[in-house]
Image 1 (cartoon, rainbow, N blue to C red):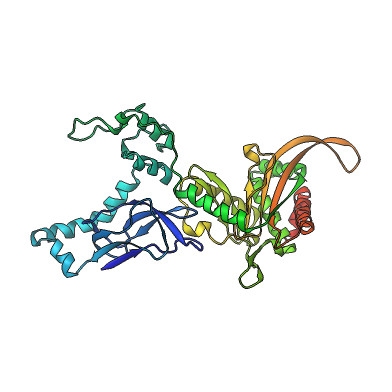
Image 2: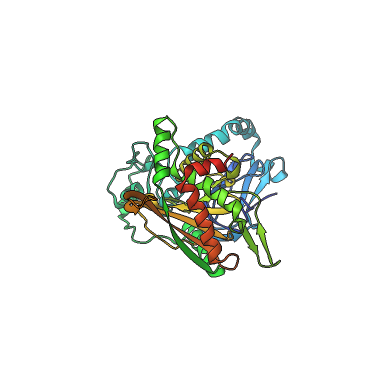
Length: 404
């Protein structure tokens, strides 16, 4: 008998919520076939089958949050007497033929409709076959708005229900006036609460003159090289973190130590339809600005498409939040526990400034806010850190020299 247990599929994961079983008792499964969707504090993941056999029993109900190591279901392994008894002799030849196509057929059915895990969950919660929902997006992706329109009966299903005269589910006219506090939203809440009530937060605000960096970026663009502003930010942060390693650290209270990390893995807070998620640019100190730009673009796309792998969200040592494009002018961000600090970049505005010649000119000024753990670092150190970062951004030629 094979036990399928919830195992650690993320960095330091301790629990997960069972969202949806992809099999039922009596189903034949193959090795590595996805069995169940699990919501961790960072992503939705599928647990694969450890071997081939027949699903005997599902132990944990959907919607239940369980600890790592909990048995979720049992599979009678192929070759066991019980599994052999399940298959009648006349069916054995058919079984062999089906097994060759089973995994392929399963995956094709599961991935046929483009939709995020959260959108799929809304459909499941309302007993809707997501394949019946008509997508409004030109790409063919079904959105949560599409599902809600279907629930209200504002659109017809793509296919009529086969061999039945029953009305479609949309006839229920259910009004989505409640949002279940589960899944990623609940996991984010737990992590934010732990961070805020464990770490004594202090937030330091500063301004950065972006004029020269934006000018350099335009010159690169005219030369055919496109590099995003956050790529410059991350490179400058790595240099500043090397000068102030206390912010690339983690407090180990139990052993009364501050662990200074030797790797520079920069997390990037990304707002998705499923909630806030933090993909990671690993080893940013070893990468060029252009490579960092490519990593940011790739990870953002994967985050918004719900395709991040566990490795994409692990081991961050410092986190950034680029909320300026959304119009933010300031905030007091919550630290990504157990890190020591998080920096947020806010809106860049054109304002009158006085240059080094005492002339009043138009400059591009950006506000930043940095929250840090006051048990680990002090305000003066935080000011020195952001001053170092600002000097590299304000004088991008100096940033280039630091990279040599």
